[in-house]
Length: 289
Image 1 (tube, helix red, strand yellow):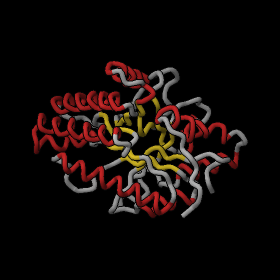
Image 2 (cartoon, rainbow, N blue to C red):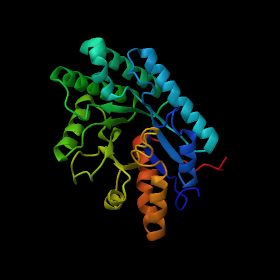
Image 3 (cartoon, rainbow, N blue to C red):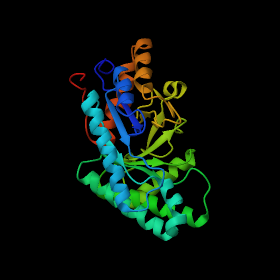
């Protein structure tokens, strides 16, 4: 099945790994009706990166996975690359906080170059830890996040944000931080949003909602922009975490069967939000390989 009523079917945030299912998971996504996977990089080794070359190899591995998925399934795979925010926390004991921050900033600059070269469409995940850390580390993480927003501004791309859950004040703070560096708030995407963004909070900052059934039903009529995601981890030790990669197309198909207006509503996360936030139109694959 190619989309819902002619729409693309987009999972806005997932991970794949050479040690996991990789292309097999993407085939499951494609068979369920999925057409586009936004693939975020991750650490593929047991140790946190401590050199810029380590990040370059990480990004290249993600790019190779994306190419293999496209060649094997026909699914389009836009890349999202950046050093993971928690890397700074984990590298600090080895490099010291200043050294870990310096590496993180240089890795963000590398990610920005990938966007400029059109090898990636966004910086992500960027942000700050979702758990308590020492004050010096927390300050370094906030500095890194500000730099990430500046890089996204300079290369004209979205920043996909990893953070703790946000309440209304948190959404407002996210919008303010983007405004302070001149990054349009519609270029700030809060990944792994687990509850509906409070009405009016955060201006045009963009939630990427975890595609759980109740949450999808709750946000479906929002005018957008917003996205749906699985945050699929492709971790052999945690099969199916966070959500299985086939979840978004299955949710879309179920909605299409139950509601005549589903296609109109699903055009928001699958088509119009991609156009508004990323500046391109996701096209349906012509055929299934």
